[in-house]
Amino acid sequence: MGEAALQGLLFAGLGIAGSAFPAHFGMRVLSRRQQLDKHLAFAPGTEGGGFRYSWWLMRFEQRKLGDAPLNQFGNIAGVMGWITLVGVVASAIALAAKGF
Image 1 (tube, rainbow, N blue to C red):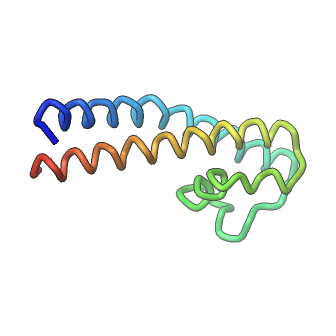
Image 2: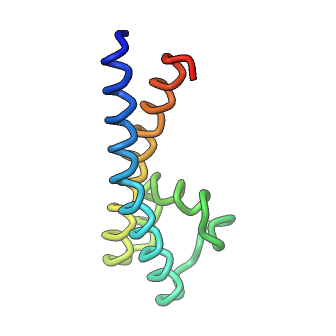
């Protein structure tokens, strides 16, 4: 892969991750708040939020609870989480290929 292509991959990956992460984080906060307010059950290990809660949302597990607002917030958080992950992986590949 050429130098320009690696640089393009790096900036694209960082741009994608930098745009999607705030959306993921914001929707994750709204999802968690919805669960707390409605007294909906948390999956084991997700009560405190964090990476486990993000992974739970990225697997769209919130659908099992049947709450429409939680589904909406959780679906957006899940999609944005996957987009963030793809951007971070692309950036890591570009950095590794450049020899950083």
